[in-house]
Length: 77
Image 1: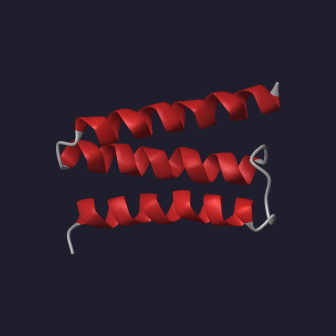
Image 2: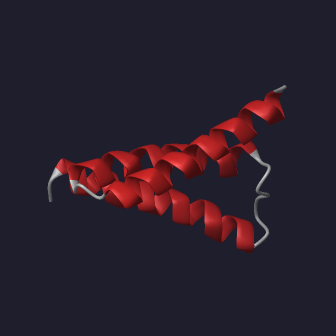
């Protein structure tokens, strides 16, 4: 398995972990853990989207990741 695929799978697992923890009421969407799972997962998935030349997927990950980052910054202010 190549490193690009490993990063893509890792990103997917991070985002899914945040989602599953949220719907099972283990964490809240406003928690730092949830936001960081999304931020890091989206960075990995954005990179992977560029590697596979999927512009729509790259845009989705960029927007999703930036939204999580902005929310995290607002929580810390």
